[in-house]
Every structure is written in C-alpha cells, then in structure tokens.
Image 1: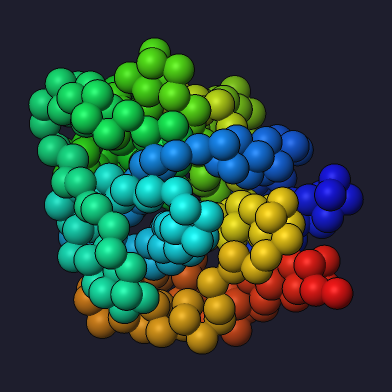
Image 2: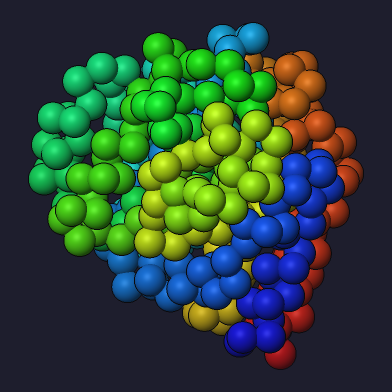
Length: 290
C-alpha cells in the first residue's frame, strides 16, 4: 500500500503549471487523509474559487469535489457541499449532471462565525475538506494568485475550519497555490517558495494537507487511495468527468489561469489534464483487479 500511495503522490504532484509547489508537499498526508475518511460519517466539502475578473468560479475545484462526493457516497458516507453564492449555480449544475442528490449549504458572506458553529452542531460532521478554497492571509484578507483582494466577494470559510478544530473534527486541506485553506500548515514554506507568497499565503492550517499540481488531481488521489483501501474502484470515469467539465463551462465556469470560459483546467488542455487522472485510474485498476 505504501509504495502505491507514493506513486499516487508522485503523479498528483506534477507541477505542469509551474507554480513551484514541490516544497509544499507533505508525504504521507494523502494516505492519512484517506484512512481517516474511512472512519468518517458525514463529510463537509467546500470548494469554489472566486475569479474576480469574471465574477464566477473556476473549473478547478468543482470537478474534484464531485469526484470525492461520489466516492464517499459509494462508501455509505454522507457528503455535504458547503459553498457561497457565486459557486452555487456551478455545483448545482454539477450535481444534476452526475445525478447525485446531496445537500448544498449556502455559507453567508458575513456573519460566518455564528453560522459555522450552528452548522457544525446541526450536522455533526466527522470531517471537513477544503478543496481549492481561498483562505485568509496574515493581514486578514483573501487574495487570489494575482494578489487581488477578493475579501468582499467570498465567504470567509476559515471560521468553519477553526470551529471544527476546536470541536475535534478532522480537517483536510487541498491546494495548489499556497493561498488555500490548509496551507497554514506550511505557511513559512509558502512564503519562501510561491510567487507573492508573503502576501497571499493562507494562515489557516488543517490536520492533513494535500498539495498537487492541480487541486482536482489531489481529490482524485484521495479517491484512488480509498479505492486501494476497499479494493474497489471508486474513481470517477473519464467520460463522466469530461461531461461534467463541459457542463460546468456551460453554466459559467472559467479557467482560473486563462480567465476564459473553455474546457481547460489551470491552463491545461483537456488531454493534458486527463492524462494525469487516467494514470491514477490505470494504477487503481491494476492494483485491485485479479
């Protein structure tokens, strides 16, 4: 298992976009995340990175969130999407596309602390996952990779993770740029390794942190690890993910790098994006098939 997980870590950590994330990778957190989720019950998944120039969300994040939700559903876990206004139409579109009926909770732009505590008391989740979700910087603001302050446009979901930590709820962060929830675990390294790191680095840590070349890949990496643990393929099929990507773009999602409404992820053409995910799928099939 350990050698297989190491191969998964190598695959998802490919820095094809050139962000300089290699120093942020914490070996072992991928497997620790998967094993922890196996013991989980209700799992909150938050995603959706606001693109200031277009006023909507991007293609990196929702794809991985749905892949995770589908895998958790197959394992008999309850997945709940916790998102803010700009990303709600995209995630509703995604769920409709794959025919998955799970709850969506709309997190407010303001008044988040009280809402977070009440939400955790109501659902009593075992885990929280932040997937490509902007986190708070040292100055209390929220920045994209271009150092644009988007604080007034996004829900401050760090408060949910802080409250969860106080309650002993396990948290998982997934990111690829240094400004996402969870990156507080490697805050000093982000400052030294990522362009504009001193300004954008997120201060909010998570119990486990999975850093990958594209955040969606990390989500698939978790699905691959879960598949190995249960010896059953929980990976989203390529045809389904391609259909999902097309649907997200139709519903307004853009590429976070090019800012274009096109079927690309972090500037990667579909063939290059899916080549990485397909290697994970092939590896899982070889491991679990007789």
